[in-house]
Every structure is written in structure tokens, then in C-alpha cells.
Image (tube, rainbow, N blue to C red; front, side):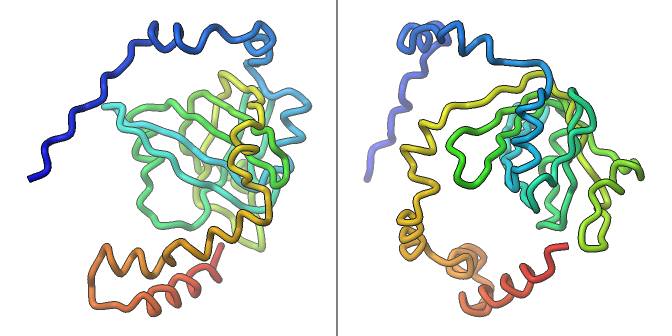
Length: 209
């Protein structure tokens, strides 16, 4: 029998700070409480972000959001609007925001090593004027998430450089990863072949809106 694994010792915030040291003054000074002109440009060119939320008990979730560049709208320097496009309908983010309105966003632009982090408070809306600004291919989203910005700052590119995320050679790794159909077939075990699941997924991807 394999012995139970001992839980690694957690560190206190003070111990972590002692190991890492203090950030430079320039790093602290770059944290804004609004979206400035430079961040507006980055958001206007970003086709992808990750959205972090948590429920009332602190159980966290992070989900991807993507569309044509500029799909996130800057309503004013302290307010963003994110359209809710068709997805898996689990609605984890909406459920979490109903219990805990804290939110964290990470914006990426293909080929750009630096990212934009935005933290604040958020809530869903069906405001017609907001939704009308997010119409695409003749379809208007049913809902949007309004983000009230508390912090906005650029994050250095070390993580993307180390990961070689934008290096075309890195795409060779995709050949070693199971297809979505293979993963789902192993997980749900419903007598459906991986090939059938892959085809079903491809059909669903053709209906992005």
C-alpha cells in the first residue's frame, strides 16, 4: 500500500515576502486605479482573456473568454463590459459573482509578451445599450459582465517568454496531447467513441454565435 502523502508545509505571507523580497518602487507605481490610454489600446487589440472568480467560500474558478479583437468594451476609464458568448452553459462565473463580486482578468494579445491584469468588482447585466455595442455577425449577446476597475497594470513578459507561448515551434506539442474527444470519452464513459465526440465538438464550434 502506498503511504499517504504528507501535505507540504504552507508558508505565511511574511515567510513568502522574506523569500521574495520587496518589489521595486517602479513596480508599485505602475498599478493604476483606472484604464488609461495605453491600456485602452491593448484591450482594443486583445482577442482573449482569462477570468478569475470565486464563490462565497473562496472556491476559485478561472475561465477563458475570447472573440474578435476588442470584444471587451471600455465604457469609461473605470468600467469594462464583457459579452457572454455561447458556451457550455455551466455559468460558473455568474454563479460565483452572485455570491462574491470580486473578479480578476488577464488580457493577452497574440505575439505580445506583456499582459494586462485588471482586478475589481463585477456583476451581470442585460442593459440593451451595453449589449447593442457587442453585437457581432447579427447576433446580440443575452448578457454581459460589467467590471468596475479597482486595479489595472501591465505584467512583464517573463512567463510568456519562458513558456515560448508565441513560438510556432511550440505548436508541435499539440500532437502529444489527447484530443478533446479522447479525453471526454475516457471521462464520461457513455459508449461514445472519441471520433464521434470530436466530430460533435467540431460541429458545435461552427456555431460560435
